[in-house]
Image (cartoon, rainbow, N blue to C red; front, side, top):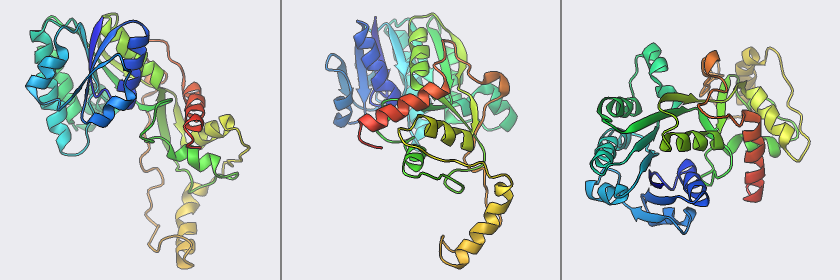
Length: 302
């Protein structure tokens, strides 16, 4: 099988490329800069360019059996990259006779969740275009929650691991009050491969277990090579703003009013029936944490 990968230099993209090459498949990868070539296998054909460039995409998908559309963008450029880029990649896939198409969205833009918030983002609009215009191509859209595990060379998920490993005692405000949901990167990659082979189709959440921030930090401590204590301080969520206001007056923290502090900022959990859900066997959140620590240590980041 020959697979074209957009966003090939990302954490998911470059590990997918290595997995496919190791299993005897051919890979054609699109990266935004020449630096992206450094993380891809030597056997991969690498193109440097923009996902919105029709000529580049036609060259990328030529003679490919499947497309893994993993491109990622932030801010205003995201609308153009996700919507226009997806149209260009899907239409090129159809023109060149590709058999399968996999798109990685995000759990926050799953149609079931968007219907409750009323907010339709650019990934969901790209998702809708795929569903309505895929033609004879077998397609899969996956919605991962927070992806953790080996290969986080951009250090996007490193912060809580440093927080725990660097402190024998970890208490608020070193962690927040709220929920998080993380999934092992290998679960996401296995789901993509199942879509590329045509085994899995449709719309699939790929999630781990809902954890409070206290539980997540405790899980990191459990697999850390050092000893840590992460106490569960009951009532602290209500007391924390008052304590920070006192600390502010004696210059221990930045001076501001913490009374209306959002103690669950950036928290996210998935519906109960989505916990540990995946179209392929789920590697589990605890293994994801353990493998993350091992990789960060090998990379000299912990």
